[in-house]
Length: 400
Image 1 (cartoon, one colour):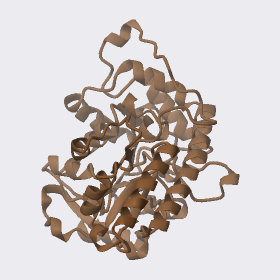
Image 2 (cartoon, helix red, strand yellow):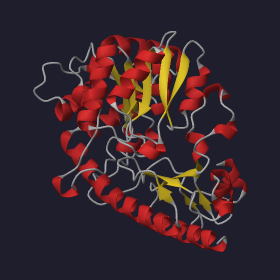
Image 3 (cartoon, rainbow, N blue to C red):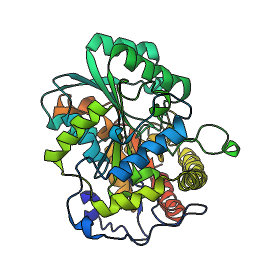
């Protein structure tokens, strides 16, 4: 963003489109519950919150997962299976800080912030696992078992749906991954911040969500840790309220890590978050998100394709398109070059090499397999997307 600012970028400028945007529209959208305009502050809110979070919110999070994904199952989540933190990065940092001296697997490509996250703590060893663009980033259960057993992985970190590719592990495939984690005692750390942005299935059949919580057999024994929150799925990124869901023993360690890392989330925002986990609120929000963003997904995919920007796979989830530049004019086939040229026409995007998560910079930058990729977001408003797409199209034509 500093490079964009040097080119005159301002977030409120109508002459700029931020295709690099990592947040969804946070304003009113058709069919969604009204946006929260006021938050009550009680006398006790001037005091510290418990590091693990307000008990009432922890109960509400547990009830949300039990109600939506675990009806009739004998093992149910409780407040003790939940810890609240101030945003997703804080939640992830707490989890990673609670790991021991282990081998931690992570996939390439994946969320850019994992690079710093996996580099800051030196007591575990990050092990990259390469996904193949020619296979649309598919990864089978057999391959997963081989990687865990062969590399001695005690934990695995991934975003699902995946940022940046939009790949979604779901249904029986996700069930098999959870089963593999259980069988090999490998903790799956799932960043599920885009779990409401799922584009598979018939939209006329209603909304869809994806979560590994659906396939956990015993909430206190299965090695499955989920991180989610209000940022993307409820479209409140400024509230900085997230949660970690997992076995009680993990939540105890995560909360202990939070006592020295961050101290906990703010009390008023935690209390205000409780109402958003009610059944009607959740379902209305998801339905509105999927109607609004499905349309923008189709718009972005269609326009990029007409410009010659291809995809290894159309996104099944998230609000990103992982674009390939190899069919563009030669001057625009490198992600960094495309990024710089796009700034000149008031557009921001994210070069693909930033998602080639490389803790400690152990691999030379020139070796990145994603130099010819760019991530485009359809998080902004539609009218802003259209203006940016028009400018990108003119830029590409000028190099033909």
